Image (tube, rainbow over all chains, first blue to last red):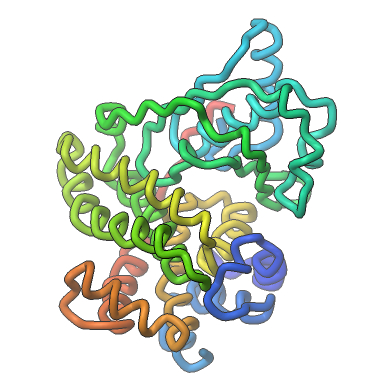
Length: 50
Length: 276
């Protein structure tokens, strides 16, 4: 994966029916951040943000 | 068939279905083939366009149930569990959105889960599809709500995958491993009636935009979602780590394994077979 369309990924992820089953509510910004961290392959980024 | 099936695949199937005056669909293949076959059966007797049946509210009631052809599902991968599901995922190429088409009658009436049909899967596809099944179980187990039946199925599904997925990857002809993986895939799709989560929520648009393999995408994203959910799933991760007999307890034990899988998966390159 590359870091293309991160905002759009976050927006689409937030309205995906699966999002409602997450243990804590997630919004587009949060999902976009998780996607960015995964693309960078840096788990510590998510550790710092969560 | 596209790796992430599109409306054109469904339309082509419908054309063949009607041209042959068929009265049922045998959906044969991995998740893409099964989903597309189920949607073809669903659409075979409908008059409204496909996207009118997206899984939103009660849109499924728009369908004429008499117009849904009977389905026999024959999975050739162990991952999606679509053979025991009531939906099919189709990519809308115009909007780059994966749409879930749902109807209770899309549940196949007969499933032929023959492990011999999965023997030819190469190790990378075996691993990626198998991890999809694992994430189905994992996210279902983490989803909020009291559903001990789904939780039990999910836990045993994860245990089977932890035990047998490495064996199936190492030796594709290991029939015991292949058969247990097929069972685990069906268990994952059964369990996720309870719910999924942020891994799948992100993996769906990523697959739409980048045409990535769904299971592989799940594998890469999972540890990042675990970190985000850490506090909310701490108690549940104690159970997962114990059931999977991980070296470290709790979230850290699960995260150690997840991070290794994610890092290795990031290096995977899966090329889609393209026949259309």
